[in-house]
Image (cartoon, rainbow, N blue to C red; front, side):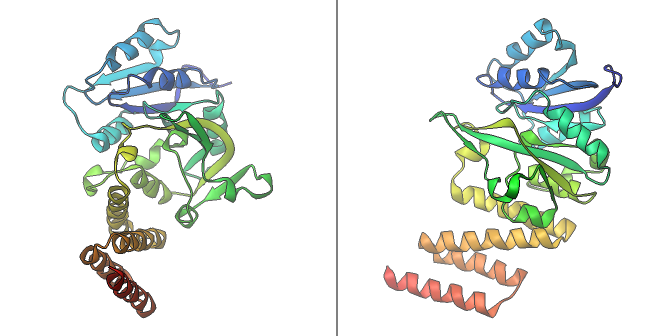
Length: 308
């Protein structure tokens, strides 16, 4: 067994007004059974609720309260900057992530992932399956990755093209090597999100999805993704991969970018927003010209206009 006082893994937890969920998130971390020491870095982005009292109670009363480093920002940094700032504070050889409204359910999840990464030095990250929990309806569903696990595979190695095939990666499932983010610069991007972190890690090696359920991704009205409209999420996804492709020039990013443009064009045609549809069609043709695709969408535009 390794030295339990050595910080092998840091858990990055950003939070903003998560008082309803924060205790469950922290308990899921502190319940971990791991052979080496860990720290929990909680970065509170100037919450206006009782998040401080919740974290302070854990620090003061929990047997592992000394493992918690709590930072309460005096001004609101915004999610992207707080995420990057917190990553840079982590001291462990590995970093795990769990936002303040999600939680872990497998007490050995960290150990399983670290064991796998230590045995597979060429990989940059490991993640696992997750449960989607819809807070309002109290309905739980498995993630969308079942279709990839044929014949009860225990794991699947993933690269950029694998992810472009529709994989769902819950950030609360991720463990990665800290050394690989030393040069991750948020100022390079206008829309820094989790996909930027994954794209950066893929520059150093593939990842692996371990086939076990170890966490819950909570979907609720206060969640950033949940409260945005479908169009807003499509626009943000497109903007993220547009700047990722400009930075890294990877073909899998181009493929995802094209997929977003197809969705945006179809969304705008369906909504009779023809000027916007043409705008995204021009973007698509600029990215990769195809006479067949151009003819298809021009026909769709003409038919849609005729049906009005």
